[in-house]
Length: 266
Image 1 (cartoon, rainbow, N blue to C red):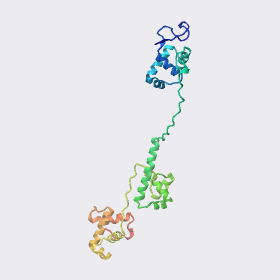
Image 2 (tube, one colour):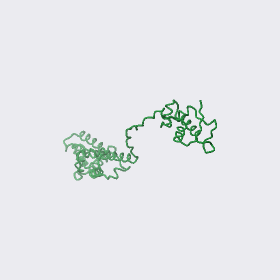
Image 3 (cartoon, rainbow, N blue to C red):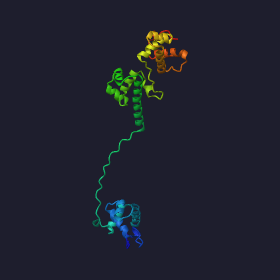
């Protein structure tokens, strides 16, 4: 049953119109009673078995019918008019904030890019070292770094000073190492002692039989060694008339032959 409500004095003194259509339904009284005791719209909805949106709609009607502007004013008027009884409602317990695990710090795009660049630098220094045939201890010895420092450096965990020392030992400019111009170094060719000996003798331009006689080898064996040398030095596709001279030139460039002891290559 609806309960007529008159708030304040008559409309002549600024109060609401006391006409019969100004009232609160029992449901609206329940909403006002709970709101006056600190319940939020969501909690009121749970208490009354309705939605939060429905409670908001009821509150809007309550404010309008009581001619007030907010919930506090509505509660004050409701208590004065006997619509709200604080003794019949249990005040909701104090809300305890829920501790949530701290979110991991989100790296900025700049931080991520820097991490990638440092990791790339470690990979590139490793590639440069391996291209020279150096072990990690050898790089450390040449750069004045401990083995542990070299290992950290190649995983991108070194200081700028460590990277600079490694670059100096490798003979590589740090700016080039970080730039898009850097290319994976090609390991230098290598020759066994016997292959270098055969090439050195063959540099004279003598026939395979003469070279074999000097080395105590059969002619086919000398030819087999030279074929291996040509493959290793990347000159196997050079014209046969120039292949031997090309092999000697490449070997000298890489320090595999003494330029003064190469003989008269043709």
